[in-house]
Length: 445
Length: 160
Image (cartoon, rainbow over the protein chains, first blue to last red):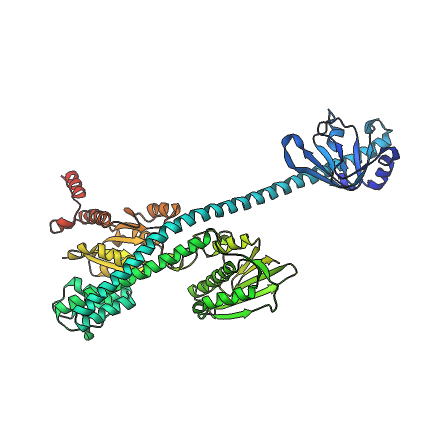
């Protein structure tokens, strides 16, 4: 027979042992029922209200247990050898308690059995509920700590990136400037001194860069090998340029020159692309750092979406884009420039992942919505979804599933989104499964 | 005479181009080939083997779509035909795991970090070529200026 099968009527027990009018204690909110280490020989039944136990000696501000009406306190000290209360018991709200202070073993047999069986059950239940409470507290503690570490990480990262961006900005600026001058000088020389066909292929190289793939270039060598008098090195260069042998003179000296100037052109082109890319990476890093943009009290998120869509038009042209504005949406206090950034990053992410994974009929849906206490920014795509095992990591910098690493940015997009949303004390809710990935950002009104 | 190939693999054309430029000096006596994917490199190595030529050195980037550098090197390691091929991993972003894998399953002979210097890469390629030529028992005299004297000397010493 289990203990809980015993038909013990709590109401009967309470009315029999915990209802003497002279044992009734009324507590005001904040009143102390028991002090830590106080000798206690009473068992308290909470008729109404709520009490909590604290450990002042451990300097812990959180309670170690909570007890509400129809439960008991003083259980430990009542049964322990030294009768010392291990915690300080305080009324969380106005409460009413009644106590039993006899010796349950000294009662007549029938009463003693009845009361002890009941108390045994109480003790077990107390144990279970305090265990549960302790677990809950540990869990909350863990969660808070986790969040704190995250915030700290981002803050450190922000400072570091601001410094880094500043340093790199100067060097890239100088590279960019010098490169421009360099290109101008070279272009002038070539335009003045060279024959038309050399100029032409210099310009092609400069405008288009390297267009042939390594495999195509290897194939094209066959054609050039038929031209007499070309050495291996020249053949390689000409094949790389993607120029058709039929379009060129057969004069080796001229071919040498054409290949050489095409090469100069394409190298300049590549260097310009590389500086541009570096500048782009630096500007993302900067945005991750401390924000410099101003806040305003009446930001219309519909307008931030419109601005963002204007900026990413060349990207969204590649997919089917659906836009839903919540008409007359409530204005909020926010930094509009940063909200534009949030839209851009989320939309870019969605489009790039759709394109990279060659999703059939790629669709992005962006919407603004409003709930009772928040306005919502929603970006949805029909891509392959984010695998469960990386969903935790997507806000970490440099974590990217994009196909071509560096060439598409640094994987800072979502880190920036998180930083901005945190600053607005908003929340990000992400749900993802194959065919539907949805970011919902809620900002308080 | 059979030709010896140096194969460079990187998915970014700019990097490939720079690498090709830096290895130009080897193009006189060897063949420097560039591939923008691991799959292309595997195909090229098949061709080289069919012609009875040698894939002497493979130098590959780690972070590439589809097959990574380590994937490529592991495939080469597992292929009897390329048992002696020298393997170099050239990378700017390798995790601890990547590195362990590169050594254990990729069987790499050298590891170069981006950005590389022309001198460093030239020396390492020379070492690798020397190792390959000696292992294969290819007549080394005609390659003398491209060989690493140290490696050569040590090998000759132990063999005599």
